[in-house]
Amino acid sequence: MSITAQRTATKPPEREHHRDDVLGLVTSEWTKLISLRSTIWSLAALVIVTIGFTGFFTWFTVAYWDNVDPVSQLQIVTDPARQILGAGFQLGQLAVCVLGVLVVTSEYSSGTIRASLLAVPARVPMLVAKTGVFMAVVFVIGEITAFPTFFLGSAIMDSKASVSLSDPGVLRAVIGAGLYLSLLGAMAVAVGAIVRHTAGAITGMIGFVLVLAPLTQLIPGTVGRHIQAYLPSQAGSLIASPRQAPSDLLTPWQGFGVAALWTVLLLALAAYLLRRRDA
Image (cartoon, rainbow, N blue to C red; front, side):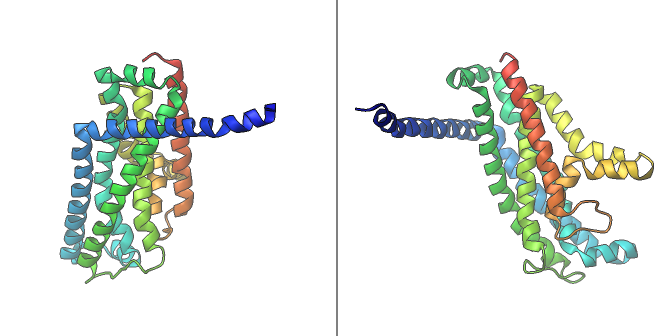
C-alpha cells in the first residue's frame, strides 16, 4: 500500500477519535454543571426575579403614570420594549454572574480541578468546553425567561404604551436578551478562571456590571459618557433594545460587538493564566 493510501486510510479513525474527545469533553462539562446545587437555584432565580420584577416595575409605572415626568413618559411611549426588557433583567443578570463564577471556582475550592486537568491535560479545550456549555444553557434559559417577561410587561403596559413582537426591532430585542445573558455568562466564567476565588470573583463581576457604570457618570464632560458606553454591561445590554436611543452612542449590534470583544479578551487572559498557573 502506498504512503498516500495509508494516510487516507488513517484519517477517518483520527477524525472519529477527535469527535469522540470533543463529545466526551462537552458531556463532562455538562455533567459537572448540572451536578452543582447552585445551578438550579441560580437559573430559577434568574427566571423568577426577572419575570417578577418586570411585572412589578411595569405595574408600578402604569399605576403611578401621572407622577412620571413628561420626558420619561415620552421615552416609554416611544420605546416601551426597552422599559419592559430592561427593568427585570438588570437584577436577573446577577444570577448569571454568580453562577458563571461558581462554574469555575467551585472546582478550585473542592479540589476537583486537579482531576479535570488530569483527564484533559490540554487546559484551553477544557475552558472552551466549559464556557460553551454554560453559554448554551444560559441562552436557552434566557429565552425561556425573555418571552414570558415581554408578554407580561406588554400586557401590563398596554393601556399606556402598546407594543408587540411584530413591531420593528422588538423580536430581535427579545432574542437579544438571551444573547446578552450568554455573553455575560462567558465573562463570568472568564473572571472566575482569572481570580479562582469565589468571593473575590463574584465581587469583581458584580462591581464590573453594576458599580462601574454609575461611577463613570461622575467623570465630567463627554469622557465619562464615552467610557460608560463602551463598558461590557452597558454596551452588551443594547442588543435587548429595539432601536438606538438618542442618548446611545452605539447601535444595538455595535454594542453587542463591543461586549463580545470584551468577552474574547477576558477568555484569552483566562486561558493564558490557566496554562501558566498550577491547579
